[in-house]
Image: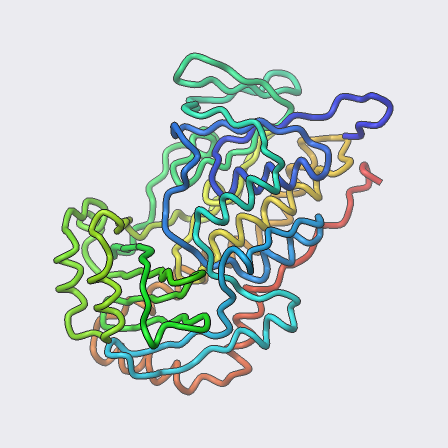
Length: 398
């Protein structure tokens, strides 16, 4: 892929202008790949509320000298408090010490702020809005994408960063049924001050078959999320309102009830919990997948955005100075497969524990969390929050 001596720079077509697409644009441009982004939505306003950006994503970006300034845009959370539904403490999980050891802290950040930071890091990349991809075709050593609106695009690479319902994945893997563990998720961000929610306050409240999270963002904003067990079909088509959510959390900690009460109903986002069985083959020829298109996972590890950014960083390192582009994509997929498979499996297993509803199971869970040795808990968190590092350069690129 050398561009010296007037050689043409390769061009990557990126489907999706979410976190994955913009992260890919930022990292690929850093290693000399031109990009064009195609987004089916009519604007660049990101969906969703807020998220956790793990230390692993920040360390990964540094290998390409990219700094998103997330500590200014969001807020470092030094610890995670685990509580009962009524707010009694179960355990505090310290992250600050681990972050010092890893070289970066975890940050809670609004999805819009992260989106803006990635867009700036990508250097105002070209984005075509209202472009709904229908299919792709590999023609020789090039790839063409056809869009519903009638246009086509051609490039040297195609990166499917088009999320859970990826068109690129569907063409690679065929029809798939998602895994639906049977609970709904509510998400919201609300301006709120509360004496308990300060200094990077982050807490998870665990009930029977339902949970709630409170995270302080920058300024006086609070991000909250809630889950509630129900049949997959009911979670998929949930049509209740704020009053139903308030009833679900009646009797919970006062700060939980206050957060819901202060949130306008229109600000609450509802999504069903779902992932997909792990996909071993992410692409062929000049085509690959990234982020949720490759390895959608349940939110229990809070690693969706961080893993997506890791993908983009590793992809860029594999493409840097690559001579054989398809071979570089296979190197990227091989480098990412073991870690992302483990994360998907761990998130699914943890989700089952988190949503336990039987009273005895709930008691056993609390006792386990309270008495689990610190070293075991730290080790588990360290595995998730440690970026494995950039892959070794291929022989062809040396």
